[in-house]
Amino acid sequence: MSRPAAVSSLAPCADMLSRRDAIRIGSLSIAASVLPYQWQGSCAGSERTELNRPRADSVIFLWMGGGVTHIDSFDPKPQAPEEIRGTLGTISTVLPGIQFGEPMYQLAQIADQLCLLRSFSHDSNDHLLSQAYTLSGRKVTMAQLFSEPNVGSVVSSLQGPRNGLPGYIAVPGITRPGPPPYNLFVGGWLGNGHAPFCLGGIPEQPDFTVGEKSPNPSPSSDEDLRPRELQPLDELSQGRLHVRLSLKNQLDLARRRLEQSQKTEAQEKQFAGAAHLLTSPAVRQAFDLASESVRTREDYGQTKIGRRCLMARRLVEAGARFVMVDYGYDPDYGNLWDNHNAPGQNFPHISEMCKRGYHLAGTDRACAALIRDLRERGMLERTLVVFVTEFGRTPKINSAGGRDHWGMCGSLFFAGGGTQAGTVIGASDEQAAWPTTTPWGPADVAATVYDALGISMETRLADQFGRPHPLLDHGQIITGVF
Image (cartoon, rainbow, N blue to C red; front, top):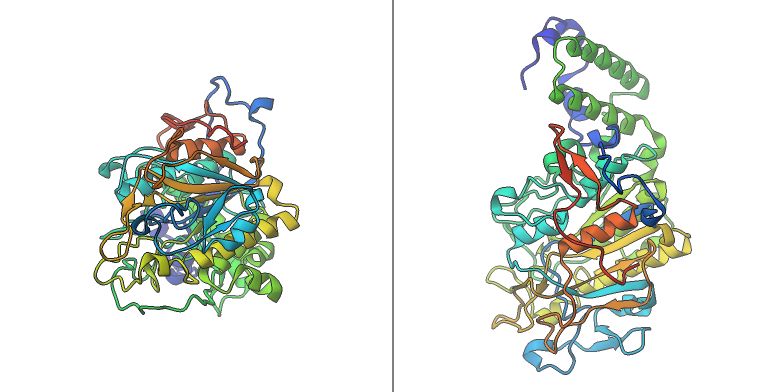
């Protein structure tokens, strides 16, 4: 980006803030950490009433991009033929008459803390369309993949930052479906200032389908989730950082007198948010998993999904409003949940794949530990946990031993945040192919999340140009969750 004329005339001063430092600080997409709450229309319901009193203060959005197999996890069909049920066994949960797939042992033991939805359904088998729909609650075309804000972006816009943490954080925010790889973690018409603050930054190689993958990679990981942007340059002390931030503010003041555009204002807010993160010890501490006990870390599992769930708990405990745990396309595991067993995937039969420590078995352990941990700390009642994927997998196992895309039926769960624990909503047919009860789709999941946070369905949001938009264009709160 070329330097504005007003700044060029101050070149001797500008040079004191090195180009590398300016890029380092300005690169954080966290304008939301200092932006004011978005305008809400004066229409009925936009003011908080007893009817939309928040049940939750925070959300942990467990985003399993790629399509988790529902028939091998939360909706097994033990009476179906083997080409449907596979070779996995089923296990009884603590809820009478409710069974989970064999890999979901730990969640089965705390099923009385879950609100399980077995009739998640919509009409698309396309990854991109389905993921954008599920992340935003808005049905999109291929031309709208990046135009609609994520649910977390809307929460960031309406409720703002808290305790110095951005309103929407993605841990780590590296999933890129494709090919070619697409970044669907967007602020859409709310602007980039409400895109998530991604701990993983921008992946060096976003297309995780390329490159050699081990046929049986280790689930163990010591993934470092501390944002690189929070590590000041080695030669830059806190004192020098404050001096340079002060200088940058002076330069911005000169520029503002000549250029009062929305772009300039967004850049200034982005810089202010980055400066706060760099200089706040409390915020930096929230990202440090090393301060957790060995026992806690072992409970979650020394895996990517385990560490990411533990990070989410720490961030919510520190005050974060909306944290997305991103676990899908991966540089080590490839298309983690997209188990077609197509040539080149190096996957075993789906029934064996599910037992791996980075697949369903490890995800079960991490999610169960998260819910137990939140409950033991007294945080579960005010934290809504949502396990979400864009669709299920085909009931019939294909000739390669995999399952293909299946938007017509899937499973997800809610926990905490005022939800009815020990509840099973909806049911599917004898092959887990179609809901036999009311189907609930991505817009309904989004509406339910908003309701938990006390956000009225009548709320209007202003886009970057001040134009009002409805909170959702369709969808309703899922009956029975609360």
